[in-house]
Length: 512
Image (cartoon, rainbow, N blue to C red):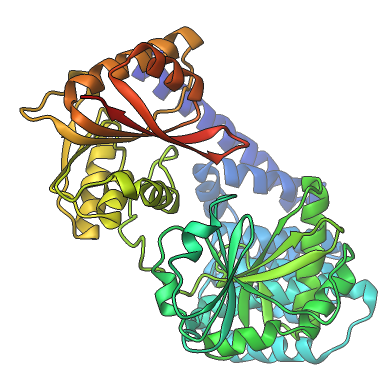
């Protein structure tokens, strides 16, 4: 269909939507099927902005004011939401008045949701007083769900009017016990970099107890830093007791010690468990609600604007070990990472690979990354050990631009070339070739085999004798086949990095 045809079709759709809206509005004015008409109107307004303009132009304030007093509670609820969608500021006073008078608890949060679309600064003190009163009440069990929802919408509204007061991390000099998560089997690489602290190693992490946390944050080879929450009793798969046991432990003490400022603290929840997704979500939702209620809303669950994460990791006996992650804690080690692609390697993963390769690196090396992406491997190569010159090649222009920006933020000097590696030439040969090899994607087995053959042939023309090739890939079979076929290369070392996904690190040398 040409542009003119598309425009005609768009106009026809708008005309149809307009006629539908007029029909719904006429029925609403005549009080016919009011609840159903409001629901259909909401759908039309969300689908088409022109329907919203038409409805605002064709309806009077008195219509909406009357519907806010309708005998059907669901009509009042949908009317409030419609006023918010329409953005009719002149109805804000009627909306707030209806909220204060509303007796049906399940409706009240809808008024607040609608008011979030407006400037409610003139009602700020009244809203704060309502919030304080709700916090002090002890509602019956059957009302708690609706009260929680009302409190949540009030918090969003108050935060919008007053601004969200974020906390800053201040716990660097407090004795802390943290777990540094690592790739399975490689915790020792991280542990050997921790100085002046008590250290113990497990297969997937390093436990550190220290009064000087700052140097630990600069270690590049761990994924996450988690603070252990100590509870008096084990946390079992029972959400009502889980929240209580967290609060009976040192959770709130950890927060007050490590965060500057008063509660509330905004959190999200996460869980590592073989439980089914639906079961996980239901469990976490109930625990989060329990934490809000039992903490007197000093803890507030937030899907987007969170400062901390409370994470449950399930043990073999079915109980959960709780941990705390601070998003307020600045991590300077990867501050260069402004740009990334879905296929980009995690910088901590790249740092681990470079740490393992360290015995084979030279500070006088000229280094090439043939599939450099946003430059992570090269930046981490330079962070691990000095190099004379570094070059990155990639066919994707946006990746090259991202790599240049990342490298500038890292304060490094790396040369990037927007070109296919197989067409790339250089006047001098390289000492090192490092690569996070491209994923197979939609290539057939035969195409992938040809790719690795061509890669080894090209690498042979670019590397010096006794040069080093560092490859990270989950296509180990193709690498080993090419090593058998290309006798000019010799395998120095092979590491299995992620056994489940089959990822390995190969350190290969070009022979004399």
